[in-house]
Length: 53
Image (cartoon, rainbow, N blue to C red; front, side, top):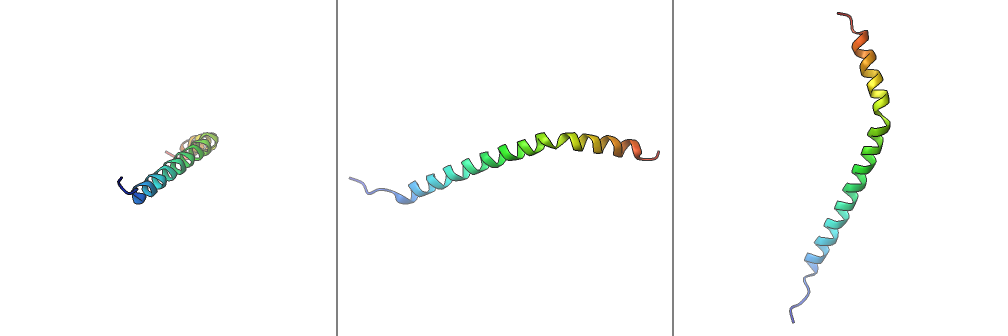
C-alpha cells in the first residue's frame, strides 16, 4: 500500500482556503461597489459639469 502524500493533501486544503477567501473578498468588494456607485455617479456628473470650458 502506498504511503499517504500529506504534502499534496495540505496543498489542496490551502488552495481550497484561498479560493474560499478570494470568493468572499470578491463578494464583499461587489457589495461595496454596489453601494458606492450612487456617490461616484453624482461626483462624476458634478465634476464634469463644474469644469469650465
